Length: 469
Ligand SMILES: [Zn+2]
Image (tube, rainbow, N blue to C red):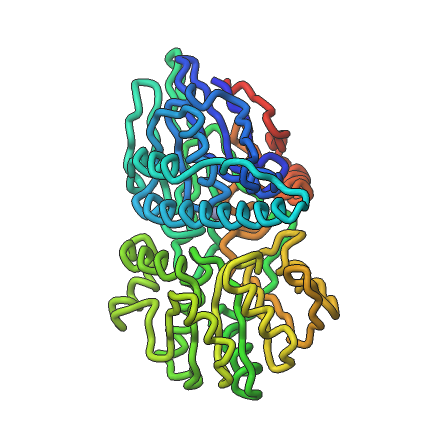
C-alpha cells in the first residue's frame, strides 16, 4: 500500500493524507483547509486536490477543526461520492464550523466585490463551494464511537480512540490485511494536552507498525506555571478588582471557550469570583457549548463529576451569553469592570476584533491571548508589543495591556509529544511520520528523537509518497 502526504506536510494546516490499498481502495484521512495557502480561503480560489476526488472511497475525519474538515464540501463538489466517518460530537461540531466557515467566505466575497466596484483590484468569482455542497457533505457523515471496530471491507478495519484536543477528537487506527500480511497504521489527528481542563488524556496506540503524528508544539515547552483557574484569577484580580478595568479574552469557539467558562465556573463555586459580569460574546460558541453539554460523556471524569454535583458546567450566576449583534455592540457601553470572552482566538475577524478596537486605547483593559496566534494575524501583532497597531487599516495607539497564557493549550508540548510517541511504540515502529507542524518544530522534534536513538523518523514533503511494506 501507499501513503501520500497531501497536506499539513511541513506546515500546520490543510491536514490531508491519502492511503491507497493494493486492492485499489482509497481512504483520505482528513480534508482540511490550508490557511498557510491563504488563497484557498479567498472566494473563487480553486482547490486543486493532488488526486481525483471521485477516486476516494472513504474519508476518515479525525475532528471538527476547519484545518481538518474545511475542504470536505469542495471534495464533494469535485466528485467525491463516498461516506465520511467521524465520531458523533465531531459530526455535530463540523456542521457548525463548516457553516461558519462558509459565512466568513461570503463576507470575504462581499469585501472583494465592494473593492472591485470601486475599481480596485479584487476577485469576482464564485465561492469554492456553496450551501448545497455543504449540506451534501454533512449528509455523508456516518458516526463511530471510540473503541469500536468498524469493518470497512475484508482488507480494512478502522477504530477510533481518544485523542483529547477537543470534544470528539479521535486518533484513527487502521488495520490493513493484504496478501496475508497485516499492517497497522496510527493517525493521531490533533492530540490534546495532558491534564487538560475538559478532555481526557490522549490514548497512545497499541500494536501499530507505523505512526503518523501531529507535531504542532515540537521544540516548544508550555511555560504556564499556574493552573488555568489561577491564571484566570490572577488577571481578573489585576484588571477588574484592583482597578476598574475590563479583561478581554480572545478564544476559539470550540474547546478554548468551554475550558475558560468551566474554569470560571469552578472559581464561582469556590466563592472566589468577584461579583462582576462575565460575557461570552459568540453565537458559534453558544452552539458549540450546547454540543459539549449534550456529549458530556466524552469529557474527562473531573468535568463530569463537577456537572453531576453542580448541575451545569457552562453556566453560573454572573455569566451572560450574547447571541445578537446589538447585544454585542452594547458591550462597548458597559462601563463597569467585566470580562469579555469572544471569538476568534487569533483576533482575526469575528466580534473579538470590535472589542479589541474599542478597548485598545483603554489603559485599564487587559487583552489576554489564550492560544496560538499565527504570523500575520492581529493577535500576533498585539503580542509583538508594538506601540501602535493597525486594525482594518486604521491606526490605534496601544494603551491596553497585552498578556499571553498557554495554560489552556489544546496540544501537547514537546515533552508530551515524545511521551505519546514513546508510549505508542517509539523506536520499535517501522516508521514515524511527523506532520501538522511548522517545519522548524518538526525538525526540532526529529533531531531530539534521533539524539535519543530513533532511526525511524521521517518529515515528509507535501505530496511525498511512501510505500508501506
Ligand atoms: Zn485541531
